Length: 159
Image 1: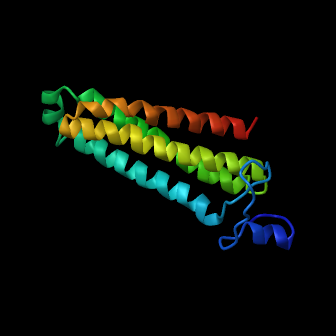
Image 2: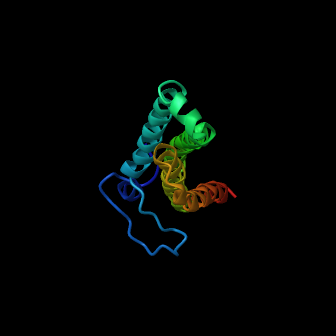
């Protein structure tokens, strides 16, 4: 439970949104649902990362070795799992620092950067492994840049 006045508690309730311009340092449009979303997204990505890793190590090993994509698949799984944990961390930090709108805003941007970056980076590598479509290698770095931005935003939140 967040400490503060009744007005502050209402501002952070799951049904009320503060709608202020993005460039204002006190901008907050975060609710408890947003905090839960990052934890849930991290849990889903973690679950899928473990499942895909096990599937790749056993059922898909021969196919991945034959296509020369085993290392690519392992890279996709590793980065997905790292950023699943990062998303859970963002959700927990949003709860802990929910009374600081600047930190919460930066954590929100960080979480969406992690999520989008993971979907683009790992997703494009999975598609590459399963289909052999090589032009997807051109969009994979965009996911990497988004993940880097997520870490930079996480750092910025606590400077």
